[in-house]
Image (cartoon, rainbow, N blue to C red; front, side, top):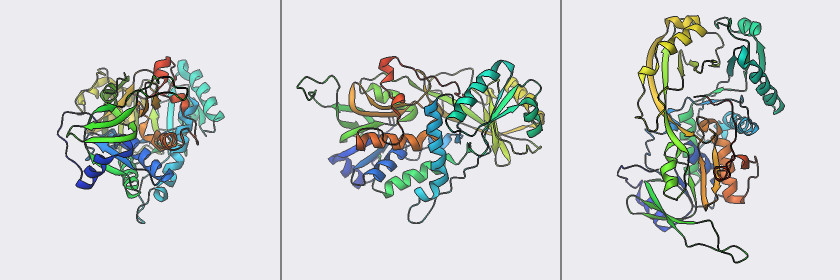
Length: 419
């Protein structure tokens, strides 16, 4: 990733390895990079794979600061499919990611997401529900009376409809998943290098099979801040909220921006029975977290690269009033804590940007998830690994999310973006 901090090699063996060359250099060892590395080693154990990460303590990583939830309530089929695989992976993660007989505890719980709509949003929710059911997502449609009966703690007078994915959606321990995937990737042979990528060394222009000059460039090596030159066959930009300056170093304009999101931790003396993750029509969300709750909303000031510290002012009168209106018991809520993380917000269309860019054919992208990265990482890691090993997607066709759509002007519309 790019930054102004000094870098230190993880160990002499890692430095020696990167001074020679690797088959695949993954820039960023967060959840996306770790997933790609794990799948690569699973598909081809002979590959030399290096993860380059400037913050190996992951103190600022979105993977460590995510609310770590997973849902199937999307409006585009590809996002539904990505999360369906992600849910299956989470359910099998204890065996898939076990190392030396030690199985990780991911803590998956599946009370579902509860999307709420007033009259003006009800038809859109119905249409999305029909699409979700068509693609195998077991989402329930709940009229207002059914909502009131099922969730007695919910104020429903101004609502028309809700959709609930109980048993098919929920939340999990994201940092545990990240650490388990990274550990498993390294156990299979991937190398973690503490370093900071500051630029690319480009190869001379190639030629097509017909002998014509190729328009696409090619990366020959990465340049690290400490002077290391890392030769690679394929590079992957999985730098998350820091992906844009890295892309710029390769001459690519990437519309991925670091946008701060504050998550508030609060308590309430009243228990909310069977509480799912609730998405209110006014834009805020909340869910249980142990005996407490967490929640947040899109900030009014949504500038780039704000300090990675919680903005307590976002829990203002309007936010508190909204929570207390929807759940009367929240009139007695108490703020206990807060944290902040970055969304890697794709301002082009708020969906993932995957695969090779048309101008640099051996630079692949896995970024721009706009808040969906944690839940989509297992499927995206598999897809990017398939591109590298097989030259094409084999399991789930992710080509609709190609980064090439930036140059084509082709937007992927997803109505259900939270935050």
